[in-house]
Image 1 (tube, rainbow, N blue to C red):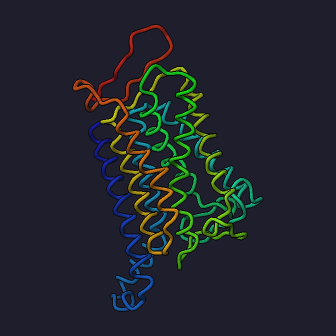
Image 2: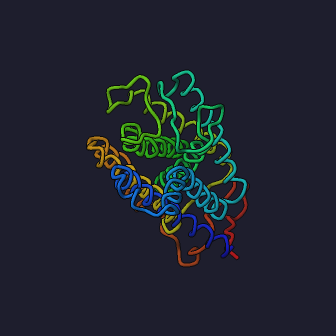
Length: 303
């Protein structure tokens, strides 16, 4: 288990460093081509490779770190019960969106995010839905489901988790589609900084859909993630939000940042604070998982 934790930390650090490197490339190097021309041939080759594959690397590292975290804290079944629906349902929404304009509107992916499934959707996109969807849902669930589980708390966690996920897109989408080097483009630009409002309904609906499926699979278990166990989810959420924020600032887009802070970052921090703190005996353990079978709750310690 210690080796898994080390791999998880390595992937998380690599995820954040990759985003920082990508920002430097997009905002400093590409607008100033003389910097590239002054590099030796080897340096130019490395830079070209990193810019072509950097988006793929940071998403894969983020998904890997989150998957290991989920395996450690939730267990194999609960991790897969979230990841598989998140990947396939989001891929279905993206394929519909890029081919039919529903549920997000009419748009298309450009280059830079890896091989396109069906020639439409980069394979990395469903992975980003998975890892950002999971951390958003766990933060909401940890903050809201602190008492005895009930239907209202469960529905609220799904709704708020989907809102945290969508709030990240408030900031990311305008910048990534309107930057000088975009990763996707809107074929029918909308009123919200080039995006249709339908896009956000699609994000809320898709996120709520796969979170609901996971909640159904988890219904016989009470999964309680303590505040002390939210380090990775919060780090992933805030670092990805920071990446999107810097991109938006560089593009001179400010209103989405304010909305994202109001509806995403501040609620995420509040939910983290509302989550139950771990007791001394629980530090370093997996999340508490109890079933509806009338037996005493079991806590599994990390080996």
